[in-house]
Length: 163
Image 1 (cartoon, rainbow, N blue to C red):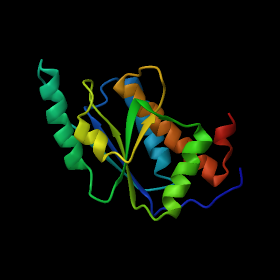
Image 2: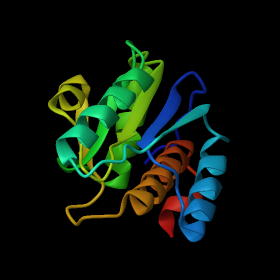
Image 3: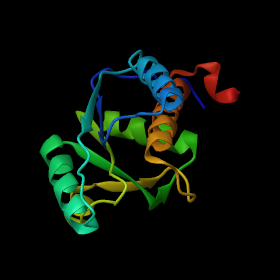
């Protein structure tokens, strides 16, 4: 793939429910997010988990928080195991195309354990699957941040992707 200039004008907004409590996942997540900052500005919204035994109430309450964290002009990518699958180079191309189209901010959304409402799904411009297998939400954050970093290294022509 030919080397491309990356643009700092596209911002990334990582939006998810709950804190990353597992120290190993938190360390990896922090590392990859710091690496992504070399290429673009990022914002992280860690939204408080809803506690209830009623799954519908949890989904409703957390979905309101997710929608409140997303701005009107955001291009929203919802992480969902039923979403579109991409290779790492395809993700890089998607980011490049987003930059070229003038998108200002990508909101990368990971819902809570119970899922998200239809309103969140409808607000999403795209649903993306990190894997057809089920991942813990903490591990999904790590995988997402690593793949975003990998995409930027592909666009910059850096050797990271070749490992």
